[in-house]
Image (cartoon, rainbow over all chains, first blue to last red; front, side, top):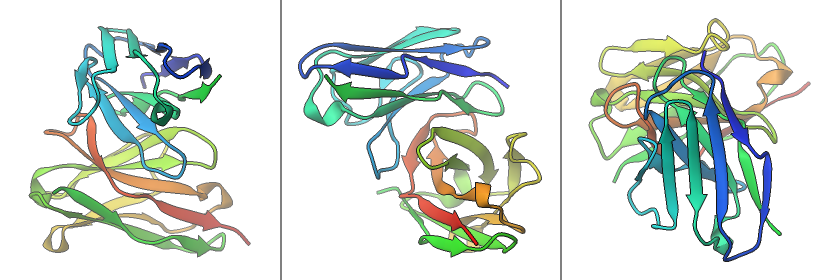
Length: 107
Length: 120
């Protein structure tokens, strides 16, 4: 099973600032990496897939990069609605696995 | 519009059985896999398993193999997650989600979640 490790666990950022979230895989997952956003009381929402492709309707301030074992989600200028928990997921092999999440909170 | 609508919240006692559902609409139900994801209180997401309603091909995460059963009834476009003997540790929100094309794909669409509470 591929273990996905996200860092940091919590990121304190002021509105308008840039946020950089990391996700590391224990073995290569190629480009088969997705990012999800989850707000309290809501289901997760797909943000990025294929490591860098934005899902339909996702604002351009969200961007993803990386391949193999190292991945990054960048939010260029945080808006109030972006404060949430973010998860990475590898879908390269069975079983598919999620990272433990990064909480982006208001500084 | 693709929609996954899950059954309502459940409160059960340890040892009881349970089957929750996920009804798909707005797409060809038999052409896409359905995944189940667990979220324990205050915790992260865990991938449980996946089913292809077209032929009921099913895969489980080793962590959940033997603990739950995933099934589907394609005649009513509904997938199921069931337990034969619930434990307090099964208390969680359970989401169904639909991957893109193929089983090894991102999760494009999610149900609203079903809260299962197991308590004596």
